[in-house]
Structure formats: C-alpha cells, structure tokens
Amino acid sequence: MVTLSQVIVMHACDLLGIDPALGVKMAGGLGGGLFQGEVCGGVSAAVLALGLVYGYNEPGSREQNAILTAKVKEFEQKFTERHSTLLCRGILGYSLGIPEEAQILREKGIIRNTCPALVTDTCAILDEMLAKQD
Image (tube, rainbow, N blue to C red; front, side, top):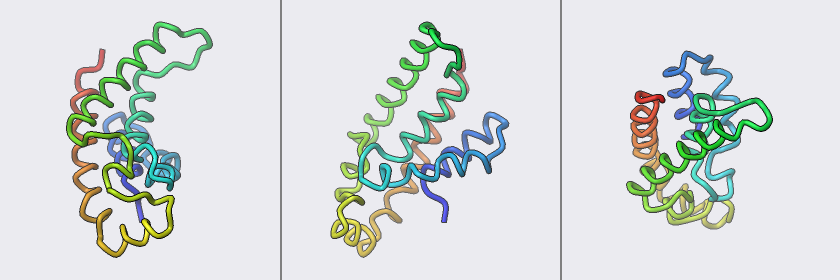
C-alpha cells in the first residue's frame, strides 16, 4: 500500500526527473501525520519536494534558506485556503495516534474518502509552484 505522502513525492519526482523509488522510501514514514495526526503527510511530502527544488546544502546559505522558507509558507497558505488546517487530525476529524479514533477512521472509510482529494489538491499546488520556478 502506498501512502498519500508517497504518491505526492512520486509525483514530484516525476516532475523533477528523480528516481521515484527513492522518493517512495523517503516519504514512507510521513503518512497520517507521522502516524500521530500531526502535519498531514501530504504537506510534509510537498515540503520535501520544495526542498529538492529550492533547498540548500551549504552551511550559511541564508539567501537560499529565505527562498525555501518563502516557498514553504506559500505552499502552506495555498493548502490551508483549501483545507483550513495543515493537521491530519483536523482534516480527518480524528487522530491516527489514538487507537480508538484510528479504528473509527477505518470503519467509516474516512481516509479512503478524504485522502484522494488531498493528493489531487497537493499535486495541483506543487504543479503550479514548480511550473514557475524562480
């Protein structure tokens, strides 16, 4: 089974010409807000993708850090305009980190009915942002 975060990273890898198998492994632990209902795995995956494009690998890269920070904030704003929150538990209404609530999510099919739209929205935001790379 591939998680929401893995699908988004695969999409970004495809856009950027990066091996998607590596992306799938990298994003494997992001699902369900780190399995605790925290920041949506799709948001975390998008931040990884933005880091691939706008990130830095040299100490003291203040200018590039400022660019990446602005891009992450732009993504977060666009995502919250559509979903009101960055938190998985806020989007789903229950937390995967609480066993009883995780059971409700499974029984009611909330993840199955909610997360595909999150993938679509997140990929659309990334497409827009990566198409206009500075």
